[in-house]
Image (cartoon, helix red, strand yellow):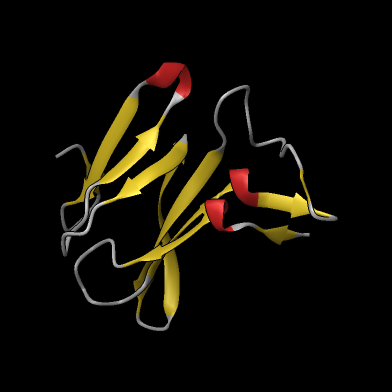
Length: 100
C-alpha cells in the first residue's frame, strides 16, 4: 500500500520554518485502488497533525475531516471539511490548534 497526495500534506504549520506533516486516512491506496480505511466514515476520514520538534515529528492534534486548504501565511490557517459539510478553521497559537 501507499499514501496518495490527497492524504499527505507537508507545510510549516507553526511558523518555525520547519516542515510539519498532516496525514489523512483518505489517502490510503492498495494495489493502485483507493481503499476505504476503517478510520473513514460516510463523508470524511480521521487525520493527524504532526509538528516538527528537532529531528522528530510530534503528534499535536487529531481531526475528523478532509483537509481543504492550508493558508499561505507564515502561521497558516487550516480549513478542514467536516461531516455534514461544515468547515473547521484552525491555527497554531504556540501551544495548540485553535479557531482563529
